[in-house]
Image (tube, rainbow, N blue to C red; front, top):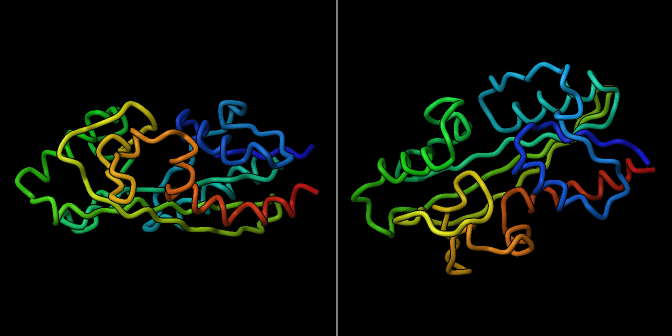
Length: 198
């Protein structure tokens, strides 16, 4: 069985990606399995640049197929922020709850109809020879007035999905996988990954 290295040390993201990949014939690893690898600095100006940079760096360092994603929350009333800086909003040490509180603070007084937002994800799959493919997914929604739900991670407690009438943190895992930005990007990536499984 071929190894697939998921280029993350984020436990919530790895858990979600492992679920999305569970029926593919790969031995899944995360960066926790490669403690000697230095972190890849996300200094690109787009999700694609960051995802490709991470996937290629890990594929070349490990000699294995690597999958990386870069994703973010884009809030229309904030001009698309925090976007590619979503995970770094308030600095690396901030908690998800602190970042959620900051978004709600910035949107104080913004009416419901103007609280539109989207989650965007780009998944990159890289081979050690430098081959790389990217796949993108989005999920449209609104920023809730207050956090709700205990599932998921990141901005899920404040990201409301109108079609389902719940925040992402209130969804069951299989419901989230069906509508989420990462789930949609991974649905596209699956055929390419299947072709690599051999």
